[in-house]
Image (cartoon, rainbow, N blue to C red):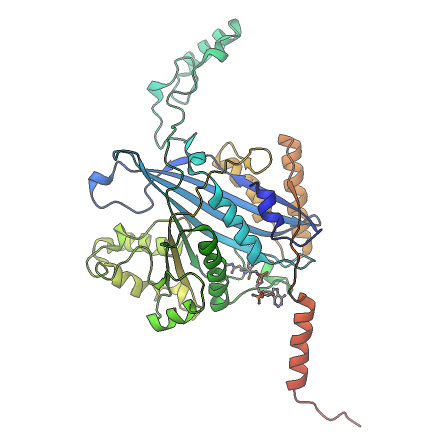
Amino acid sequence: MALREYLAQALPDQEQFEILHLQNPSKESHPVITPQSSNKSGLITVKNQHFFALFHKEKAIYALEIYVYITLTPEVQDTIAERIVFVSKADTNGYCDCEVSFKKITQQLLRYVLSINPNYYLQKVIPRHREYHKFDKHLITKKTKPTDALRLLAKRQGDVSLMSSINLNVGIYHSFQCQPNIITKICLFTKPSPQYLFAESSKNPKKHQLDGASLLKWWLDILDELIVECFDQNTTANLRIPGEDETVVNRYLRGLKHNGWEAGDLFTKKSNEKHDLAAFRIPLFPDDPKSRFLHQLADEGRILSMYLKAYWAELQERQEFRLSVTVSVIGIQGHQAEEPIYVPNNKHDVFLTSSKKQFNSIKNYITGEAYDTIEGAFEAYLNVKYFLGDRFGRRLIKVEGVAKYRWIKKESIEKRRQDIINTLSVRKKPKK
Ligand SMILES: CC(C)(COP(=O)(O)OP(=O)(O)OC[C@H]1O[C@@H](n2cnc3c(N)ncnc32)[C@H](O)[C@@H]1OP(=O)(O)O)[C@@H](O)C(=O)NCCC(=O)NCCS
């Protein structure tokens, strides 16, 4: 199903929205979890990034960033593969003037990402190290000497058919293949922040910011429903709240629909927490507190003496967690109930950028604005719209909502809150 169709089901009936979906080229990357033994160094890890920005009435209103990693173990017959979906950042700015559920929107975008055939990411992968000696000798690369490049250019001018005969398939990109229904893991770190993707948006009094505990429940609701609807029954689901014991964690898990939820995380087993080094069990994700702590341990020379149990205990002591805000690590692992077979269409679903640089420069039209006033939300929309139109002849994807919203309007929630405050507040006698 196309992105537009997934989103329409989360957006209010008859309201018009537009979505920007950026994706960068797949690239071979370091393993997500550093392998301990050299015999695992044959793993191939392919990294990709999705960035979604939603617009309503010519204003940016919401954004979500997701990384997808596919790890292949090629030496095993029938290539074993695993997909990690790392939800990096979700943010709003408070400038949407109709009632929307960002919970539903986030869930639908995740559902869309989960529906993508993993082989889609593996077709054209930029290698970690290019083997220039294998390239067609008529190609000009950064290894070509200037004199040779001039000679090749002159040759191309003299023979116009030369370019079309160049073999672009050797050495420039890798291509891999795996079974579509591979193990999927979803990983995220829930940590509230005044803003992640819309700078200064916390200054907008209309922005609704969830506190740590509410944010955790928000994500649990989203993921619990996804597991029930999209994963098979044997799926494991873990929640760890650094600094809290199992009783507190279990309180959050009570009432969830999937019965595979357990306190803990995907990377630590009770049996190994005292013996396994965190360095070889904890994944390295971009801009993630767990990874930042691993880097700090490496800088301090403690990385090869930090076992998992001590790692989790020390993590909660870090400056960024001392503000008594509830933060958590959520992990899901299992097979999807239906094979993910969707192949996104480069026109209707996604804008596939040619490089990471281009990805970041377009994303920067959204994240580089200041959202303390509504102008930022308008500017972001106009800039990205004109950039895509003028440079690439592309448009934002239009989506009309079809969801029948049944929940109470925000104004009425606010009004109810005011009423409660009014009945409880002490009334002074009016002055005569
Ligand atoms: C996380 C975030 C995107 C969620 O946005 P949101 O607007 O709260 O999300 P939803 O639309 O799903 O609303 C969640 C709940 O708040 C309620 N709500 C939304 N706006 C409200 C408002 N202005 N006043 C009162 N309640 C409101 C909704 O009715 C809903 O209630 P329900 O769960 O009982 O149905 C938002 O809090 C945010 O931008 N936070 C800052 C960045 C951040 O911390 N991101 C987390 C990354 S891990």
